[in-house]
Length: 260
Picture 1 (spheres, rainbow, N blue to C red):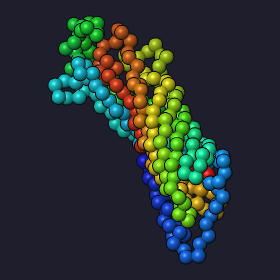
Picture 2: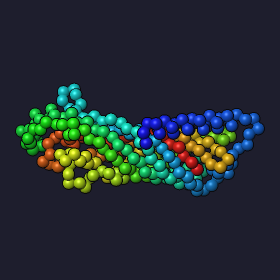
Picture 3: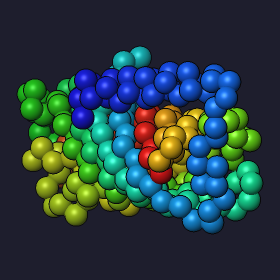
Picture 4: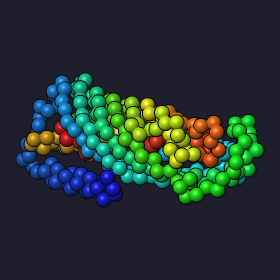
């Protein structure tokens, strides 16, 4: 998904919310889907747009030079979709599982030519032959296909006619299908490696709108990886890439449209 599609999702939700608000102001309105939330189990699906970036903690030796950070990232927009399974616990709490597939592409920039000064070797790296980094060496396009399985506990307020606010929080198990973690090649061969199995936490807030045939929920969710995703380069690889990063963690802000 590009920025245009992300904006389209936002505009669609705003338009729906405006129409719904007009509906809620009608004096003789009727509540819609009155018994929907009384079901023990219910199902649905969602579409989402993402803004993804990395949280980077740099190695103080190979990732910095004076006050200059030698590694940076550029955020990107992407998209995803998934299913919703809801278990009603009581009048105010629901347990949700929302497995989905997320697509992402981010960019890491390694301005680490300064590490040539360590070519004679250090306690953590063997001696190496200095090299001049080309644009291909400095830039890594990191593509990810993420199987995201969040389990969220939802706390919602009382229904106000055809709307209901809520907040939710929980944990995610995330599998990166394009991690390259098992590859024998590394950044020396332009292959960036990260962990396949990951854990994260998520927080979400939104408003549920009730219509005649379905419930629509626009929401904002933040997802933050808890584990370090970086996979070290091979021992013979100079410290231009993975050695410059101590911790690498994905963080994402998601705009979600749910249909139930």
